[in-house]
Length: 117
Image 1 (tube, rainbow, N blue to C red):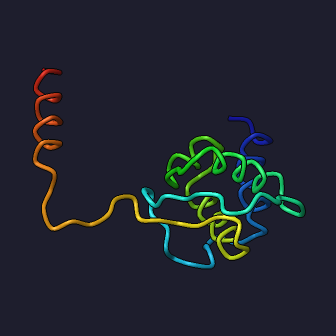
Image 2 (image 1 turned 90 degrees about the horizontal axis):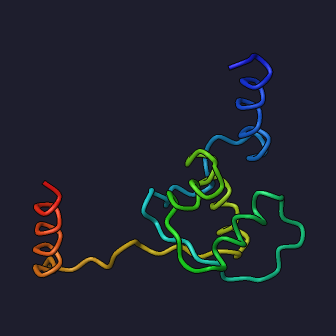
C-alpha cells in the first residue's frame, strides 16, 4: 500500500467520527439491531445520511451496517450512537431472550450442517 493510500485509510475514520474513538453509549455489539425512527436527514454528515438510508430499508445489525458502508465497526458504532442520541435511530436486542431454545430450529441447523459434509 502506498504511503498516501495508507494515510487516507488512517485519517478517514478520524474525520468521519469528528476525532472520537468511542461511542457516547456502550450499548452496541455486532448483533445489535438498528432501525430508522426519523425521516429528516438535514444537517447530517454524508456518512450518517448513508447510514439512515440503509436503516430505512428495515432493521439491520451493526455488523451489516458496517459492511454496507465499508466502515470499521468501531467507526460505525460512533456514528450510530450519535444517531441514537439525536433520535434518528432506535436499537433493539437481536433476539428476544427465552428460557427454552427452539429445538426445531436447532435440529434444522444441525441437519443443514450435516448435509454440508
